Image (cartoon, rainbow, N blue to C red; front, side, top):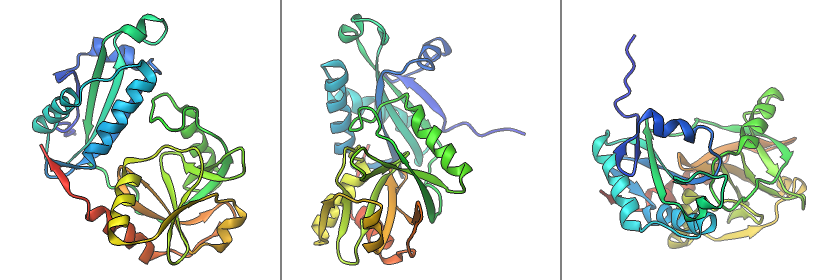
Length: 271
């Protein structure tokens, strides 16, 4: 049986990556990335992805590649692939991660593409675990804890896991941002989290739609007062959550529709 791999690519600095170049990256743990969905050759929130890569490079390496160079690498992968695809941009140092030389080494960009994704249908039931991701505000590689806790949650009969921080507040889920609904306003967890690009898109479009939003500390006890919950990431602006730990929620369809409406209002960037 043949497998269609026409939309699976790996390019470093715009050129097809060789096995010898990719093999060391399989064992590397010091890199950061952003993930996006390409539809009809267009990307939403491109400014947010560029901001993320620039800021994370400054945090990790003390320097950043020009936006124009990053855009050229992204454009090449989009032009060489199908109009609809998933695309991940990874920034790393060619000097590796284990010496001071890595701080002064050349930054390189791996762009990996694959089949487009819309995420699971949902609704999802989330187990809970006390966990705080290291460098939570940066989208970086090498986080085995996320997958470990996902597997633990599935063994317990859940679909995924949500994290509770050291203050007892819900923060995020394994690969998702959390978001809640009280029947009138959208509520974001007040915690140390990764500011997702989808989260930022939805937030700025909710502002334009005049929908109230606020950040609050969300404890397990606070969940009983809320009307709905959802998760979002680069795949989707909202999948309904119907349980977090022992707290059940009704499937808040109007809330999910609102999140999707906000995302649809975001213009896409042509390449």
